[in-house]
Image (spheres, rainbow, N blue to C red):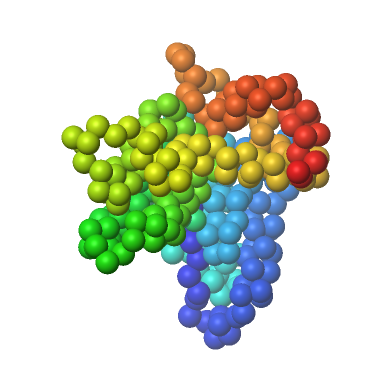
Length: 294
């Protein structure tokens, strides 16, 4: 993960649009002919993921990644930009080579997790780390509003609206891309149940079920909301062009062999299982359904 800082040369205070054009030129010249990335399509490789001044450079080998990094630093200096080594990290997945990546005279730190665009990217994959991160932030947000929940001058109806407006968006940020197990679903449903019970002033000795609490609040489970949001998001993907990277990602398989044992619950395995449950036997069938927006 690479982050830019503006250099000290005169004329570096460029507009956002010009800055993006410069970054685009740098990356096109950094990756060259696109042979040092990870296998993506049959005849192409994926070299990088760009978002403004945050860049993720991808490679299958340490040598290729160091070569890309050197090109990136050199071309950035030519345009008056510089790479900040302290904010750059390397994340290795099943990598046997432990040689460090260098930027100028600095060594980049190897990490197991990385915060990228508000989400937590983990070397073990999945969404458990990101889900736990969002749960922690949502719990903190809910606790900061403790006085509001205990107030007798605010109606329960208003409190529920504030909960939906202030707490749920913190929890559900990026939830469309989480790969969730039954345990993960239980975690977030328990969090929601505790929040609603505190808002509605329901005590454990009242012996009121969670389903009754949801009915009183006129809400559904968080896991159900996430499932709906996930398939609304997926619905946009099949409507894209057939060669879109988003469509490729639905059926993409990484090179190499996985470790022995039960396969992990990945996002794709999860949505394919849900797709089969709904009766859509293939992504082509789902694409046909998605073309009808109703």
